[in-house]
Every structure is written in structure tokens, then in C-alpha cells.
Image (tube, rainbow, N blue to C red; front, side, top):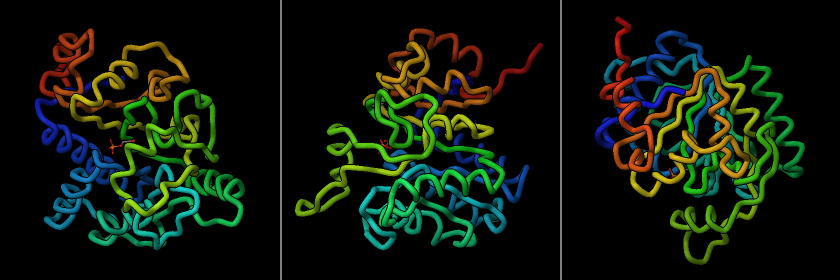
Length: 260
Ligand code: PGA
């Protein structure tokens, strides 16, 4: 696990964008796993700006998002399909046919989860999986006590997650109870996992993920098993790490120290 600690949220986002761009330069037809949530909004904003100013092209890129709410069709304003179209897909040179999210309005959500898992495999698996981190340690919608070997399936959202995401819904709207999410095992199969967490409100989850025991109660701790996991955090999110000085010594300013 590489722990890259940047001074501010802004510089942490920039680091994540440069790692995504690097993947796209190395492999123009990369398969990218994408995430939603508030943390990712500035990442996509910066990625769009980079794409518009001559950065790497999305033309041959394929994407798979982590999750979608059960019950929301792609046109629903709070669906993650709408989020992705609004903040990224509609603003870059991507082929929409190659952008994938689970269908929240599928007649049989369980079958849809299986179809989605198979579609990822058919594309050769994920080159890079971008991840946010829930306050409760979830990745995707893998809530605490999710099996660390789980595949794409239906999960029941916790009250905490529904409360955290209620800010995106109107007062008269019901917040979905279920989601289709890639499993922890699906995420761990990505060739590179890249997680971004910023702000003091994520400090406990960050500490549990990096330094806590490997435990289903903190699904993000499964990244401890991944051979290539990069965790990018700002100083605020790093506040509860016991080995903070060590991480800063290994990667000063989030960079790779030269081996001398
Ligand atoms: P947030 O969500 O970026 O809105 O905090 C992260 C997550 O729940 O994965």
C-alpha cells in the first residue's frame, strides 16, 4: 500500500488526476473503474480541464462505475448515471457506448449484478479502479461486514450512508434502500486501486483502512491485501494515522523517494 499524503485537498485531487492521466497515457484503451460522491467532483472537474487543454484522450477508454441505486433509472437526476453524464461523460471526448453503470431500473437487479460482473471480465478486467471512502469504511456500496470476497451484487444501504447521501435528494424523495455494487473481491481484481479521501471527517475511516486490522467491518481495509493500492489523502484525513511521520518520510509531499 502506497500512502501519499498531500498538504491540501486540492493537491491530493491533483495527484489523483495525474495518476489517472498517467494510466491513460500508458494505455489509451484503458478500462477505468470510476466512483461517484462529493470527493470525486473536483477530481472530474480537473480531469475535464486537462482533457480540454490537450491532456490524454478518452476516445478509446472504457469505464465501469462502482455502483448504482436500485430503483433509479438512468434518467433519474440522482442516479449515478446522471452524475457521471453531468460531471464527466458529457464534457470529454468519451464514447458513451463504452461507459457502463449497473442499471438501477433492471427488472431483476440480481441478474443485472451478474451481467455487470461478466461485462467487466469480458472487457479484460479493470486497469485502474478509482475509489472514495465512506465514513463507515465502505468502498463502493460495500457496507461494513460485506464479504471481503464478494462480487457484484445487491447491498442494503446503512442508515448512515442513506443519511450522508440524503443531501443530494429532495425532501419529498425517498432515498433508495438498495444498491447494486461491485463486490470487494471485484474491486481487488483491478490491476491498480486508487483511493482518495479528504477532510477530517474521513480521518477515522482512513486510519482503520490503513492501520486497522483486516476486517469486514471496515471493507476498505481489504486494500491491505492488494499488490498495487495507492491511497491519496490530505493532511486532514491523515490526522489519526499512527505512522504519519513514516508515510511522510517514505513519500515526501506524496512523491516517490529515490532509492539511493
Ligand atoms: P463522499 O462519498 O465522497 O461523498 O464522501 C464517498 C463514498 O461514500 O464512497
